Image (cartoon, rainbow, N blue to C red; front, side, top):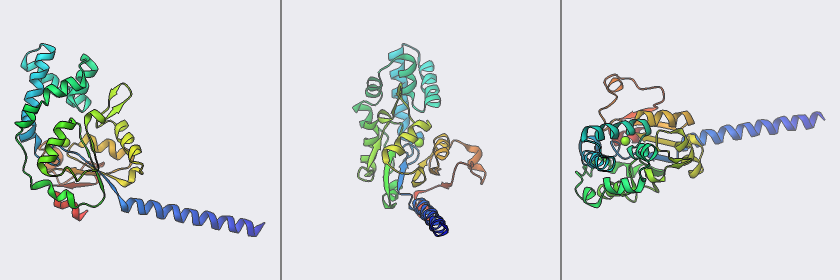
Length: 249
Ligand SMILES: [Mg+2]
């Protein structure tokens, strides 16, 4: 009986050891990267997105019959509240997601984009592991930018706003629901996932699940409080100012 107990404890000890080792290995592995697009891989706020913002405001004016000031207000308000303007328009005004995205991201608008510098984000190709692009932008727009940046082969998957589905409609970042869904879809433990994003609220919800979080400060000039101080929010593991900083992580 004693021998049995001893053997049982030994098995338990071995099991704990194996479990600890596998957790450590998975933490070291960090095999999956969720990478944001706008203001992470390219300078969207000061270049590319200006055209898109104008197109979205104009589309809202035409669809809702409001003036430019009101349309601009709604565009920003829904982006802040839902993570993507189209979600608010769909939820509160019953506007079709595909109709709005087709109008606001038409072929002509995509052809006239103020395209970003190609060289900046190319270093991301050298990062080991599987990479998914996770963006609240529509797929056509995301693919245009990726093609221009020559990064289309860099990402195993492109998760655009249309693919961020959930109960009752689209559930984009920063909802924890979406991070959990994507991690489940990838079939990995949250500790194996690294999220790179310029938007702090996206990082905050990813951290709640246990992901590693990297704050891309390459372009976005928001969140001045943390930028001007040499500090970071508790849910940010690392800050980077350029992609080559990733090789030191
Ligand atoms: Mg972004």
